Image (cartoon, rainbow, N blue to C red; front, side, top):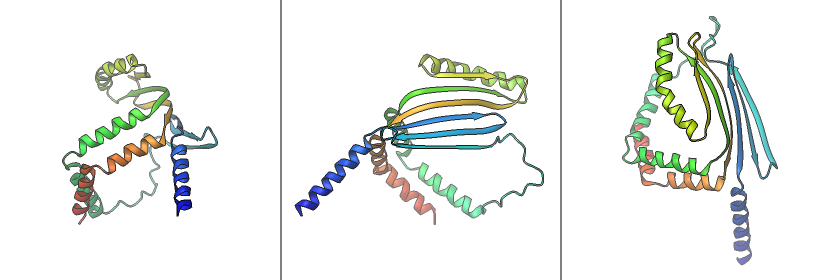
Length: 200
């Protein structure tokens, strides 16, 4: 009995020690005529190194006219999921609990490198100017806080183009603790129950 308890305690200590090692997430994405994204996850001091990339045509690119579109999901199924989501969101205390989770996760993430370059434009140049005027104070605030962020308007073209590059360090143990506290909170449990009842 003592040997089993000792083994269990050692295994638990090893798992906790591994979860305390930071995970490094590297993201590089670029949107032009195509959307290209490259992800890399490093853990255990690069002993675990996973990379993958994804590319697909931009949503702005028009599909061929003879392309076969997938069948839409049934209205009843979509309506049931919408009822469940509304019932969960109406649960008292859930929105504030979600906000606290977001802040907790942001506190656990260490942003090592962050760079955004983007350009946007609408069919009407006046709309582009109005939106850029609304975004300008936020862009200045982000720059003042040290974020490497650049956004420019396109008055002679429409669409969204840009690139993002970021490196984030996260400790799985801290994230797991924040998620566990969120899932065990009374508001989340009530929201889950409300969504289950709305499913019927």
